[in-house]
Length: 111
Image 1: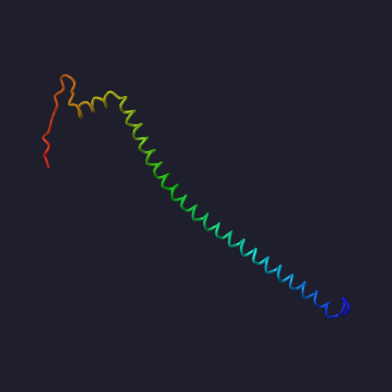
Image 2: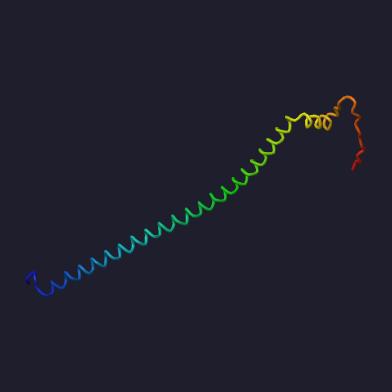
């Protein structure tokens, strides 16, 4: 038999078709693995972003409360520079009155 007989010529076309089919299957497998990895990464990162967003919201809420507290303290400090306010505090907490002022006390009911 000769190398170039009719039977053997049809055989190489089957081999090239089988090779093309094999390459196509490998390509589809590669694409499927890639999209699987990409999907896994996407969902994993979206879950992490959601968690970070919740943490950020909590920290912003805490920051707002701290800022409000700081503003209140700044206001209190500015009031401590006023002599009249210091006098009010002295009367209220320490029962210190200026000379000539008569304190008026009311009885508080004990409950």
